[in-house]
Amino acid sequence: MPGIVIVGVQWGDEGKGKATDLLGERTDWVVKFNGGNNAGHTVVVGDEKYALHLLPSGILSSGVNAVIGNGVVVDLEVLFAELEALQARGVDTSRLRVSANAHVITHYHRTLDKVTERFLGKRQIGTTGRGIGPAYADKINRVGIRVQDLFDENILRQKVEGALDQKNHLLLKVYNRRAITCDEIVDDLLSYADRVRPLVADTSLLLNDALDAGEVVVFEGGQATMLDVDHGTYPFVTSSAATAGGAATGSGVGPNRLDRIVGIVKAYTTRVGSGPFPTELFDESGEWLRSRGFEFGTTTGRPRRVGWYDAPMARYATRINGLTDLVLTKLDILTGLERIPVCVAYDVDGERFDEMPVSQSDFHHATPIYEYLPGWTQDITGARTFDDLPVEAREYVLALEAMSGTHISVIGVGAERDAVVVRRDLV
Ligand code: IMP
Image 1 (cartoon, helix red, strand yellow):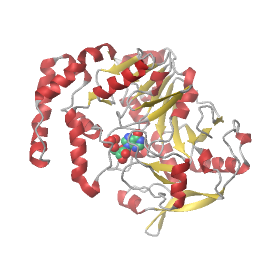
Image 2: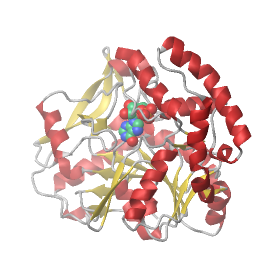
Image 3: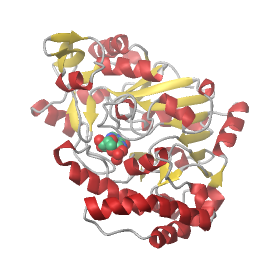
């Protein structure tokens, strides 16, 4: 079963590293298919700690081919800064390939991201400010710049001029900013052309050939289901397809090549940025979860919003992604609670919803209906089999599994790489 998709179930930061680590040596290819440097993951290899934003985590494993797919938006400055930082630490980055069709993030995308957020005021999305939304907007609006455009200066100039036509009106007249010249953008992009050229490939062809040869290809989703532009809590979402379908469109393989769809879900819930969050905690239990779980953003350092496990949301993610497995992370953070609240349904103005409400207004008004499961006090970080867990922890996992609608195959019980209980192999 060579095509494995890994997606977040909630609002991101579920700890996908646990799953990629487990696949480890079995992995031949790691593909990033959506998003850009809005993501952030810390990867620990031996005694070394690496913070990556744009590059797929596979870049750190020798022998693994890393791909930035067509569905990604690439900030070239960040790409080369990350590559150089890794090379300086002796990491071999020669196996990275970048799709010729990936779009690039330019200076005007970053500027627009920041000024639009400021102008939205109270209605702001809370973006990472990396230019992600404006770059995807240009792609859909057919005024985007693709990696391959860097190799034809005439075409590049025409496209940048076209894109700036509209944007300079906006920047000058609406946002009261200075206009951006075509030359500064073209010069900046061309300065990367020679370095990016050797990385560029027909990544769709490479991946399909690899799958034909029976190699293991891991499609690593950035952000998560509830941040997906179609299926998430729109408009408080990112601008890409962060769900399993995005793995196909964002990398150029057919959906029938995706054999396992693995959802990563935290044993509680977190969110960065604005938007509805029914189980959010504002009391001392929220503080307790945040500090025990080290819930601060990798990319922005922002404290994350925290809340209890939301079962209708997990069930929704199972349906939207076709999840075959769940990896339940950070179970150890819940140790010490006398009883653990789990949201089993929502109350919306007196009406009970067992599934995620279709209407955004309903979801904004949803309050959680909790069931309380018995907690445990024993340290579980040393557990390596399901039977090592205290009975209450096992029952918590089994209850979540029944409510979430798919198999909980792996349970994360600690920060260490090997702190996992595997109930069913992912490959
Ligand atoms: P953008 O992706 O920068 O446009 O931000 C849109 C929303 O997605 C904001 O609420 C961000 O906080 C959120 N977001 C983007 N990337 C991540 C991530 O990797 N983890 C968690 N939230 C994210």
